Length: 613
Image (cartoon, rainbow, N blue to C red):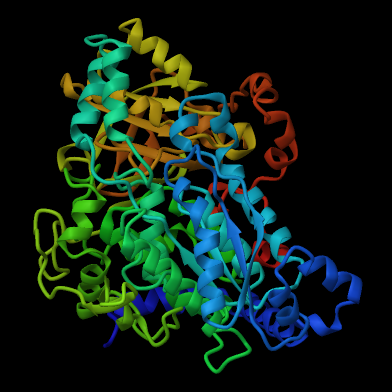
């Protein structure tokens, strides 16, 4: 299978840009591979502490270096619906490890916050930085150097990127990511959005809204819309870090448990102690990162991954930027319609053919690199399969369907919903930004209107309630970047802006903050960089300035006289309210050190990569 020339060109550009940092990374992980783990070189006190709580048989096994020890890094908590099923997983993994002749230990837990709970609340200011905390916490878990491989239990927004960064920091170890699956379908997502808009308009009360939300988010598992959490699952599979077909199998089912057992056994099979050594740092290379970006475009995935994929790539010594995203978006077709890009949810996508069909059709049309390493062994063709149960109740694999079971949800790359991907890069005198257009009607891809400037989402909501926004306008919500307040998602604004758009007004959002993967039908130029607190051009805007958001031409501009624009001073925002409360005081160092959005908006950024970028 040959990859298209446009895909190859971007991959070659990334590889050339990353040549020195990638080689330095590979040298480091190969040195770490040669150094350990060597449990026999630990002091007796070290080793005794390491297996003190183990059963006698496990202690005997871990006394030497010939029995593989599997680290379990878990993001379990029972407040997150997506992570509640992980409560049982360590026992399942330990049993599977014993059956495979190995040992498994919970190496550590990492925090996992729910953006659904913190959306529009103070705690959302910690959300993006939690990715870096998760990476650090997982790194601490693995620092005991007792392990030959690791399985990572995590699903949601910042958790998978954080775990991936940690896994790549220990890139000499094999790593298998183990999902828990989406909850069964509840209230349709479009009906949920309709109820939210009615509430925003004051046409229904809180009781009706809560009833709707509870019917949408109703049980264990990932939320079923195609936001960041489910984009994470797509990425882990298309990058070869899940077992084939694992992403969207519902929790607490026989197949889900079988896949978890299979993941544990596979992680033990690919350690340096066997003949299939497959370190995660060699799996995640330039081709795998490009495959991930292709998958993001082809499925209309979360805008958050214009931050997360950049940070994940950096952890493997690879430098990608928004130019790479933009170039791939121009050639990769959109082949799915999953809410908010359509009416279906991820369960419908899975039933229509799911990841096996998606990967197969993208391979057939030359949009993916097949010649990559994966945890399943072999190239990406291994992922043209879907998982099933054999007669003994264990996981087996069969060919994915050759045709989509529902072309309203999933199509071939030869007959896509649209010829280009779901994300665009915008540039202009307001800086650089990204916009998700896969859910935006073509007639709304260009909005030119006077700006109304806000310094918080609460100010915009107050103006909406006061009836001050019934007009054409571009909402500018600034001082929302990583250095200002941690770059919260502003998804709480979606219903109000949607109401105004439905009333016939031309509406767009421009912000240095984030929107979620469910940013929806309103055009939103997000992640504007440089951010306002750094003196970025967005800080020069005044209410009344005409702003043009043009997703067709890829521009974001204030239509202000050039001389006047050059002479304007950037405004400063009052950030005093962002410094304390709900734990924000603990993250002052993170805010001061955060990188720009196009650099991943985090604090974990090797100096060598800064120079390469």
